[in-house]
Image (cartoon, rainbow, N blue to C red; front, side):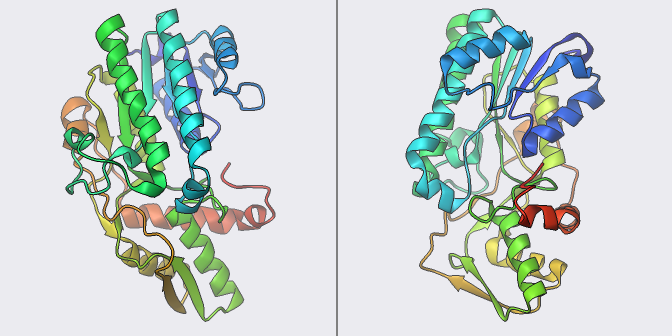
Length: 324
């Protein structure tokens, strides 16, 4: 058990979408601002070992929460497989190795459900991680992140390093990335339907055929799960973070269009990739091991996300605000 008042915490990716809520959660748990270190990319390129060494020198952390990642939606994953593999592998490799060398109290590696095999039985259980190859469009990212699970477990076995591994499902919420060139499905749909409603467009084109399913976790719930696990969980087994609800993409589109007020036609472009056929998690391990249960209903989370976009859409469209 970690007493947050007595530790220094480094949060990689702390200036990003998820990271900003993790920082808020740490503050609520009692971590003083001067004990929270958030590396910015302009000063620390975490794919470079020398920068990671300098980060540890500057931050002097007891605990590292490694949230930073290079990733996007299906299109971005398809266009950047080499970059996404290298960046995610290199960041984790250097951060974990130098955490070991310095004897950090705890290292929290945030992974991805893109690491699961393409045809994992639903709901995804953590024991199925190695039962096949990930879906092709996001496999380089998923494999790099899954390799870091092996690294965490290996370092625990050989060096006694307290490293844990978490698998959050698809996240959404306020401050998300609404840039259509790199956004995930929920912010992309919100922006497309909002713009189409304002323009009076007769139809909106969406990728795929609408048949895949996804599970979504509200970002504030994800932050709570990560901080709770960091505080209470000390085992080598990977743990899913989700809410246990599976939603078909076609259903999601209808739901968001209705909330936004778009009444036109939804056109599915089946020539574009669907991504993984189904995604929904078995979330029992998180509840059993450290008592985490997501609290935000999907509909409430969507309403809050749409309200945030409505408030900030002018800045987002002008390119001054993609999330934070």
